[in-house]
Image (cartoon, rainbow, N blue to C red; front, top):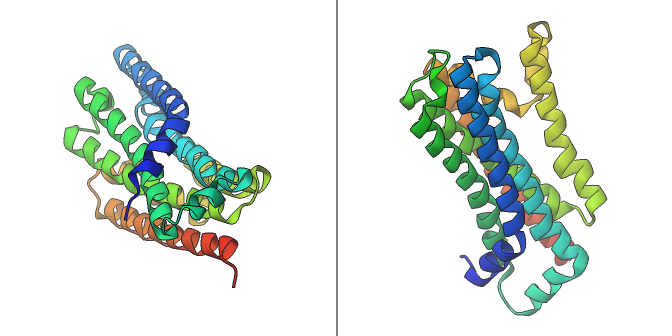
Length: 239
């Protein structure tokens, strides 16, 4: 189902972007360690959870979806790959694998460093098990975000169209999440953003709602991948 040369080529082209995101992620985690030492409770979770396991992997998946799908179509590289006789399904699964594994590896790297340094200890709400569950849930969130970016990349024929859909929509949804999280009076906003399905307090309390939310995100992510495949076939193999 996978084509290793395609995966290697995508990695070779995008390894610089992956490295930059990894460095930014590690900087955020190191800042979290310093913040824990200074006992700055109110901002600590931004650097050990929000930035390294939500925002940075999301941005990486956005970039990779554009580079591996939309840009390949713009430059004609996708036509050359299709002309080699490789089955389209194998091409798509290889690109999906590359996008998703890249995001998940970033989450895994942050999780490993977080466990080694115990950056979650400051508030007293978290222990290692709940922290691991939180980051396992983040993988589900990234599968949805990667799937959505992939779908939009398959639908878009240019950078402008991709920015307006694959990049802008997730950022707007995240912005809505931040607004209602910071302003409880605007609680109704939670019903129009998928980010409300991934809540720290659910994982901290061990609530079953955390896994229900992640299950929904996984289903939505798989659906987005299927819709992306359909969009790719409609664009490249019109009836």
